[in-house]
Length: 486
Image 1 (cartoon, one colour):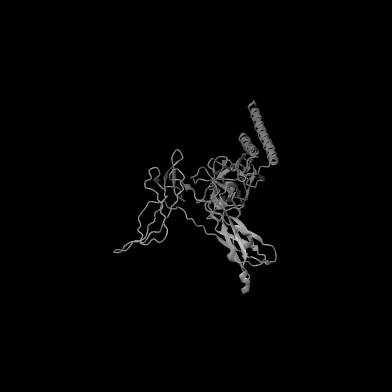
Image 2 (cartoon, one colour):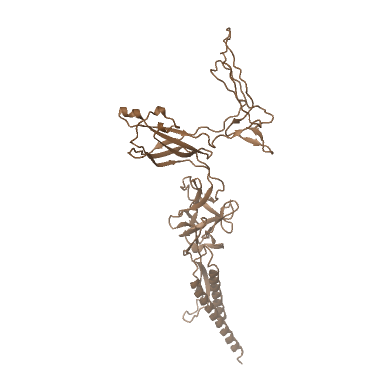
């Protein structure tokens, strides 16, 4: 039996050496958790044996227990790097449609070819869905989806509100508002301008003019009249579609007015109109589908063949009353977009002091087309896409899970684990709540392996291995001595 005792000691020492060596080899692995070999002694039991003289039957490795203490943080310049300061785990899936999740502490994520956020092994980071304002829609692993960073431009936002706060100079002498002329500085007292945006993201300048009403003083009032103007020559014009391939100046000459059609039984008098100069030409239409051929020329507009002009596009114009006018159906292009844009102007807490006119606050809620400038992740795991136009899109909230017994998790490599019966089912939660911990962006959790401690453990395991080997050698010599007795 002494052979078995020594062999069991060698086996446990070897397990200790393997565990320690594995810890040392992963000292620089992000999210790695050290393991500890734990041993127990072995005793043979018998209902007839006496316990006072038993020496034991060696030892065995009872478990290799993972140690989930927090690792130190390494800060980086990559916004997709994430670390968890708590008991939470990232949830990842092997493919886009899979619901089979593994759980990791390694936050060194990157983008794949389709702009999905993945681990180095290609697993997809899961996020909870959020509303447009960033609030959570729900916290459940059944509703998570892979996080994808958009590669398209930020959608423009048409301006609907302009807010202003200003000081109006009380020292100004009143003017007649009916004489206002935006091109004559003497007809108004002050002006301010701001840039607004249409639904296409094109910019326009809105200018506000302020006129102190001279007539208001006569009735004991102090009234200012506001005029507004907007540029109409910018890039917000509709895109022209040339239906003939050439630019044609369409004009019409009206020579005289047409007389009303006479009622039955009466005689018609008067002259008739003779419109001239009408020709096929260009027109501006918004929201109409246009098809180009391989040569880059317009082939179809609104589904109609331009070359064959079937059915033709016509425009009718008239002057005066359309008394007794007859109508007929005609093929025509229709405008595909609403040409109006309503903007509400709000004056918030304006003041009137004896000082120069000054706009102290000016804001509008529109935005032009934006380009993605970066991705940010806050401490609650909320992922935001930031655009050059100042717009922010919330993409989701990083899904975190925790377990009742972390040491019951099954290691699957790549600093990842799977749930087991011993660990319990994953409990979904959000960063910043309970014991899930917070998400730290641009940081990585380093391995919690203490090299100094591991080197000491390595020496201890080595000495134990040598001692058990010596015990085995001594036992072998004793056996040889017994065999040599005559």
